[in-house]
Length: 197
Image 1 (tube, rainbow, N blue to C red):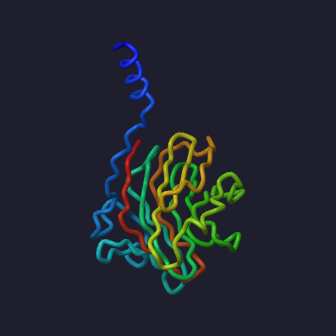
Image 2 (image 1 turned 90 degrees about the vertical axis):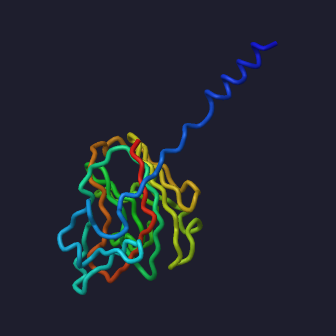
Image 3 (image 1 turned 135 degrees about the vertical axis):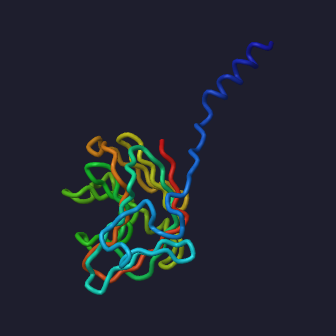
């Protein structure tokens, strides 16, 4: 009678989900140590532990990049903005981007979707229900991005919004936080944490 019980326990253990990776801060919450950008002081700053990205008067745009490169990883962060922004997080080589806010090219909110350069936003990489998952403008939203091999998954406020597969984005690269040129915008990030896989 003991054998079936042991077999059941073995089966249960083998089907248990893998432990969640331990997410750790990638900013120190005070300054931009470990990150680089031309003119970063004019575009990026910390206030009370919040990373603030704001365009300059000329709407020049800017990219804040990590000094370290990442391949497979999970990143989670809180983000908020008011009005219109065009921001996002770039990763991998060649570059793929998790979009936040209104796409300059499509003139509509593509938050949670993947931008891949030309041809833009592939249909399988679009978070089509993002608007229903996000809190109102000005409130904090939690985004989680998992880049593992050729599979890219986004959760918005705890619900999976999109899973996109493309083997063309395989090289490790720095992470990049974007301020798009051409518009007045301000975006705030907090609790930015990452785990390498």
